Length: 111
Length: 112
Image (cartoon, rainbow over all chains, first blue to last red):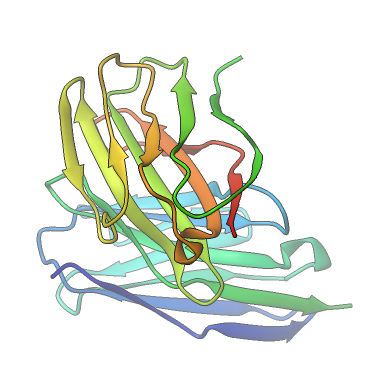
């Protein structure tokens, strides 16, 4: 069935370093790939998304890359700051409309 | 203000006592969904709905029911709650054309 694998489950970086989170998906018909950030005790919120007709998208310090052939996509955060500490979820949406989430990555940015 | 609301936010109940968690959105979104969040398991989809009177099972539908009689409301029903349904529940909505999914504030449910 449809599945999204996310790695790593935890990631610790020094402030100012870059962080990369990777996801792979199983349904080749998936065509929408959002990334959500969830701060402690709060709801997930969209930080960036990419559609299948685009290979890369940037928004200030955040970028997402998509490799449709390999069925994987990645989140890149540059110049990390302590406020980037949170749980990050990737997701893939198939033509059915169903959105499948990865297991989440807990990012810790140490000052 | 555009938003997704859930009620109650917190609920402690006992095994077997039927309960309903309400979800409402004011953005005229076609797509609505329920997730449960458990440590280490991410967000798992329970049920989703593409429009009024159209619902489909997600990955973990057992023990849950939903209905979509109006576009704005998508209640989650636990007919006979069990302790393994203790979790944090999120409702979400979005337009059908693969735009941002908006999440409600969450409902923390404890079943004793």
